[in-house]
Image 1: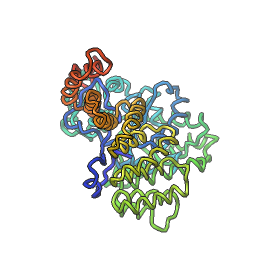
Image 2 (image 1 turned 90 degrees about the vertical axis):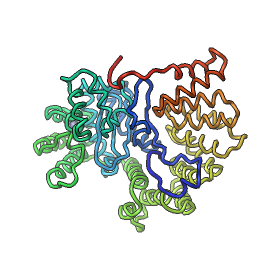
Image 3 (image 1 turned 135 degrees about the vertical axis):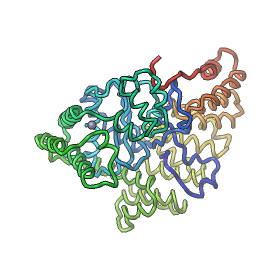
Image 4 (image 1 turned 60 degrees about the vertical axis):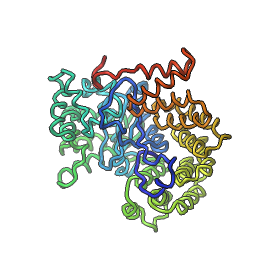
Length: 472
Ligand SMILES: [Zn+2]
């Protein structure tokens, strides 16, 4: 997993370790980023969790007629409960929403409701304006980093986005939550109805959706200290909660339980997030030492790896592998722990195994490429180049992948391709100025008109558009 803090001495011990690596999920071409967002948004990238979310969302999207839209789930490293759609292509889910959902069915219910908003064309005008915005700039806006200045200039002062832009300057997050992503009461009812319909059509219960919204509504009623951002954008009056429960109970699947195998994967996902996101004392309260479940051991192993002794962590992970040898993500974790403990040569075998067995291995391949590069072994550099190129075809916006590729080419003394990959890395993390400078140098190293020269020229001559929120 990347995108989470790992505050240990290993950071000093391993210069090659890309420990925090706030990987931009999609730093797309064609948009500019606000300066303060250029380090990338706090997005969690993780093969295991993304795979599970794909399996949660795909049946819903299919039954909603949205299968062709290639909707991606993006996980935000934020402990609060939130999930939202900003355009028709991305469902943002806070780590906190996944951690607070006890069953797959609970979070699937939330995803069904969000799918209802997409299918219903709610906030369509906003969606259209955001269609070309990057994940980074949408997040910058939601997190109140100031991207709204650009939106405010778009001239649509009568539209929601123009008003939100002006409001955002005064008080970013609150204003955005309240005006930009707020649904009308009628839209909430419609999304609830659509959500229940999608769940029923896919043979799933709407009980989890009903439970979750009831819990959030109760929180709003009885707690003043913590109010979920979700309830600010999705108003949850008690009549709505009651109507939803009534509808959900009519489904023939009301009492259906999640399949045990899916529940087990869900438990592992939550444990992983606890391990990566929370401090050790919180992890050991949630997963006390006498809890010998696989999930508890997973959370503790991750916490040990983040905060404790790498040797102890590897021993704990080995025990997980022994319990479930076919789980690719235990091997991945072992490789990550070894890599970040400065033992890249030992990380290669577990990462290779994980990359060969995980269903969508691109992120694991990038880590494997990093391990191969970190050994500085010339015999491994060709494999590194090949595996990174494969990964980048699936993750074409991975700044991290390009950085590792640049190092691999550097080890081969192929300075033209090293420069090109460095320029692509800078471009993908939103540093257009550096990208253009390196691309200009790369151009001088390639024969004029060659494929590398053309790619370098694209970046060197790239001009950022005026606004991230305007269609050109
Ligand atoms: Zn809603």
